[in-house]
Image (cartoon, rainbow, N blue to C red):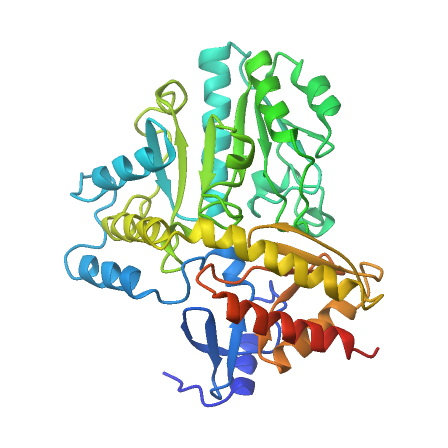
Length: 411
């Protein structure tokens, strides 16, 4: 075992022994609590990324950690070769929470999306009557659902695809936030699913026009197509409602969740559907050794109960308005930032620069120097997503940091 005594030592070890599939900011974190993170040297930071919205309930929430500890002392894993005493209870809890008849637990968000793809295709063949191996799933440009080889087959991001072909057939890609494009694509009788994010988080917090999600739902009903809603990043109160699709009263046929389902404690993801869809998959056709473990089941129930008990969706809705007001006030004072967009505490600022410049990266480096952690996405976009337990005073303190760095920034 190696004892890490400095940030430089930890970075050197990762560079030497780890795959170079990420480009982190040069900050080495060692401890977290609530909205705060501390590095190896003991410097404290506000977390404004929340592990890509996996830590909505705050770092190491005591109730979630206690649920983890209690269950870890009893039973952690059985596989699905046997029943366990926690999974059924958790399935009932999540079905009642989100209003579905069946739940299928997996681990990562990518796994949940892969599960939804298989469900949609199997439903298309067994229920809609699509000829064998001809099912089509309609996806949208700038999507991000994960990095498996199947998922990247529906991506339009060169960094996801370059060097990883050949790609899986069976996807049609249309413009996001374009109802006419959906109408044209869904007419195809071989389409089994429409696969969308209610807000495109990884792409840079792109939000569709009001009514797009409802129109998508209506068109899916009209053409007998399953609406597959990826709320891995936008769900669990992140946008100011339990689900971002709740803003338009949309109920997808396949609801895909992950990240904050466990409050950042362990990988858990979930697909929810009604019997007509979920029961097309039979024993032996899909599964996961760790999916639905007793440990995951116990943690998910406590993590979701924290969201409810602390009324984090309502608080997030209000704080999001305050944050965007502060950012719009900042924009009025500088030409460096040209736009803020988002819902709840999923927001982004767009740096008034070309996407391949280093301005956003350098801003994030300076945010870190002043005690706030954020990360650019797609070059000139900075996503801001603090834990939902942040207070109004803390939010203003963070906005003060952002103001100071942006107004004092020099190329």
